Amino acid sequence: MFINRQGHIQSPKVVSTTSNRWVEETALHVLRTVKLPQMPKQVIVEQGHDPVHFEIEWGPFERHN
Image (cartoon, rainbow, N blue to C red; front, side, top):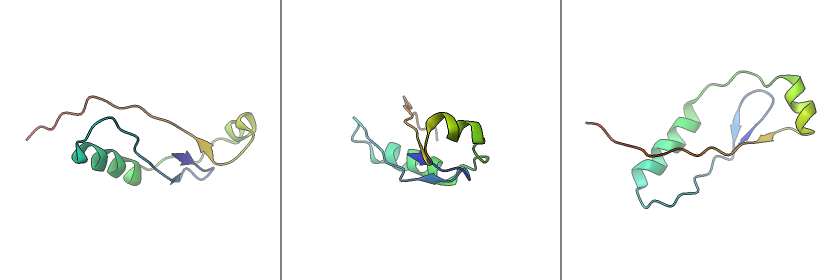
């Protein structure tokens, strides 16, 4: 995913080794609904561009009823 200076997530994508569709949909739902603060200007300066690329690894997911 990419996060722009306003804190908006762009281009979320799941790269997964699981065939569990629920896990993929849950991860995307989290990314679409999270509210992030504005990115500090220093981060943009350090990265040299906007938006900033992020990769996150989550696991394992467990579903509790």
